[in-house]
Image (cartoon, rainbow, N blue to C red; front, side, top):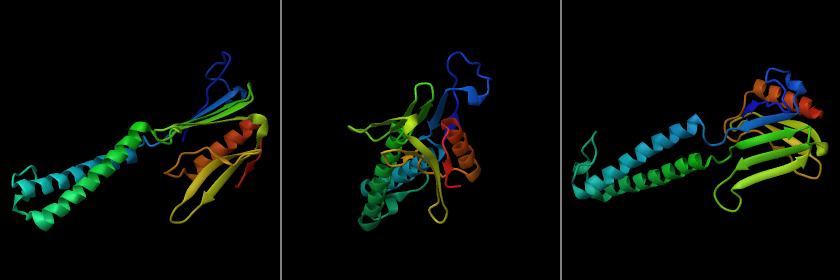
Length: 198
């Protein structure tokens, strides 16, 4: 999550962060380098396997790097074609996820108005726009969750009265402990609430 503080009411951008009344944190969704990388790799692999399967069926070489026309269509060409179709569908899913920027959005904390807005993009449909509005008076604390192991999780949550804990950080790549502590402390100080979990 990349956090940036914006100023309000004509304050100079170089003024102290603590005097600002608005904290705006941009949340990185699926448009990150690793997703672009894997979508490209899966696209190339899926297309290669699909073209190899078609080449073995038509006995016409559609690939530059090898000659799959020597393969028997049953079973090698058929299996390669099926792998290629599965890879192409997975690549399409990955590219659409990047295009839709699933999980991307922002966290907006406004002390002047006393409002909090958490916004995320979802998959297309009636729940494409996910927005949670709350009051700063209802915030009880900022909670840090750190779970190590094979599937590590490092996340910030906003504990609000009458609601489940609201996640504030991106899904996927966990933040470093130092980054998590800094963002959690900055947010807790901004809202005037305790920081839990450290």
